[in-house]
Every structure is written in C-alpha cells, then in structure tokens.
Image (cartoon, rainbow, N blue to C red; front, side):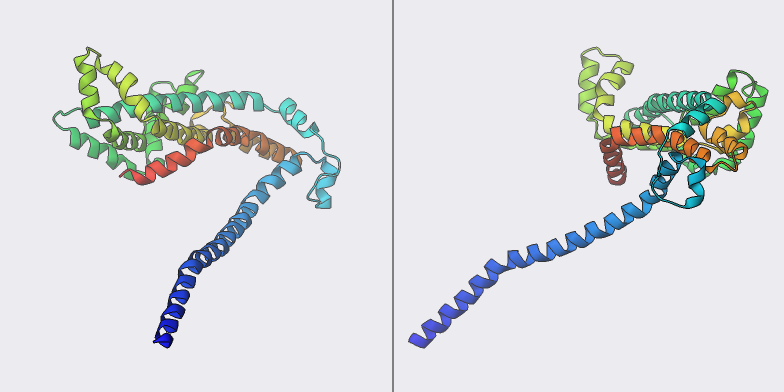
Length: 301
C-alpha cells in the first residue's frame, strides 16, 4: 500500500513539474523565434536602407571624395544642395509636384468618398451595373489610357500654359480603386444612424459630411496617403503632357537634371535626396495611418 502511495505521489509530482515547466518552455521557444524574427527583420531593414543612406551621404561629399569610395564623408558639406538649388529649377519642380499631388489627393478624397457613399447607401436602377463598370476599368492598363487622355488634352488645350497643371492632374482626380475602397468601408456605417439624421432634418450632403465621413476617416486617410505618394512619383503621363520646363514635376525634372549633370554624381544624389524628403515626412507623420490603412484594406472585402 505504501509503494502504491509513493508511486502516485511521484506521478503527481512529475505531472506538476510538467504543468509548471510547460509555460517556461513555451516562453523559451517564443523567445528564440522572436529573436530570430527580429534578427531577420534587422538584416532586411539594413539591406533596404543601405542605398538610401548611401545616397544621403554621397550628397554631402565634395566631388574629389567620390573617387575614394568611402562610405562616410570626410568633409561633409551642404554645398551640393546650394549648387543644385541655384543651378536648376528644383524650386519650381517642387512647387509643381506639391500642387498636383495635393490637388489630386483632395479631389480623390471628395469624389471617391461621394461615389462610394452613393453606391453603398442609395438604391437606384443600374447601381450594380455602374459599380461593375467602375471595377472593369481596373483591368485597363494605364498605358492604354494615355492616347485618349492626350487627345482630350490637345482638343481642350490642357497642354499649354497654366492649363498644363490641370492636364497633369485630371487623370488622378477620381480613381476606381478609391471608389471600391470607400464603398466597402461605408458598409460599417449603420443605416439607422443615417435615418436618424434624416428625421432630424439634416440634408444628404450634410449626412455624408458630418455623419458618414468621420466614421470612415481611417480609410480616407489611407486613401489620401497612397494617392499622394502615387501622384508624387508619377512619371509617364507628366512627361508626355508637360510641354515646357517650368511645368515639369519633380520626377521629370530630376530625369532631365540627371542628363545635364551626368558626370556630377554628387549633384545627382543631392537632387534625389531632395525629391524624397516629402515622402519621408509623410511616412514619419502618418505612419500609423499607413499601417492602419494597409491592415484595413486587407480586412475589408
């Protein structure tokens, strides 16, 4: 009887040790996998950031240091930035890019949300057909749309004078992707809330602006950020429609500046560094909205 009790006590002790030791083992495994994950993420971040850091450091080097292939500048200076700003139209190109990107982003935020709200919250004949037609445009490559865009621009003189700003911006003032995104997110707005606003006498534009829009603001913020980045980096269409140097956007101006300063890599790197400053600021200021937007666009179907 005593041996049976001892055996039972030993088994209970072993079971207790297993139960107590299991969380510690799980924590140890978790710590190992976490450390490996952080290690690979760190390596990937360094790999991705090295060209960017090299570009910034090269922009601080005088020309004689370029042939020494040193990573850090021995005599860092901002003279390259002064030369680029004085010998080129970077200031005007910056203004053009900011104007076009901000105008297109504002239009996308208004028009895409309006169309998405209408397609989601109103019932009218042909609504689904219209939505399918909008989605069908996503299958059309941008390169195929350039010819009709250019024909319209020439017929309506959007390629001359100040109208070139409108000619550059108009293809991006409303997007099928944005309409689809906003339509899906307006599903989260309760119809009962909108009906209550109608009973209180609020008109439809006011319901859209004061009731529905604040509830989908994370999606609007993500849409605006991605649209701004896309318009800032746009190259092909501004290259075609801009007929004079003073209306170039920054990517186009940087391309021609590279041709002018082909043997001065320190100036080319300086111009490239100047061109990414707004994108870096947008990311640093709105990184939470960017991450939230990526997560939300992956969850909503």
